[in-house]
Length: 143
Figure 1: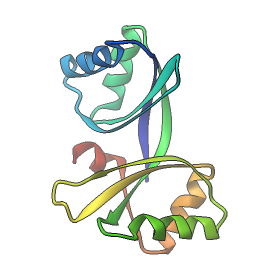
Figure 2: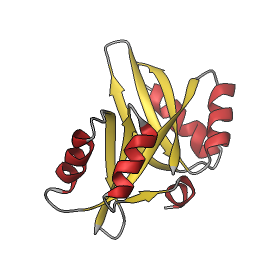
Figure 3: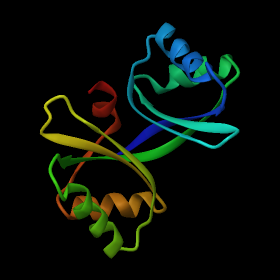
């Protein structure tokens, strides 16, 4: 139920992000979701992609520092309170959200939240126990 996420460390300078997207484009790798956080010197680009291994290999071949992180993809109704309900469940079990990002599916009826928890397996258990849909990597990569 975990999803492989690429974490790419980027120098904070013009064109560096375009280099990553060019490599992925030329490799036939589709970006399914992304998050970019930065400081004055560097950024961390987090990606869910259609082909993790190809993306990782091609980026490393081109000098990028790339890591793998296990995250959890959760489907939630795209309506007010959806995120709050999930966060309340996690808070009640003392599970910390280290970071998260989201995207809306094409149907527009639900959103997908990508979570990084301090205790991933316990986070999955809490969400499943409360009837939430955990999206497996294979399905997310193909959305």
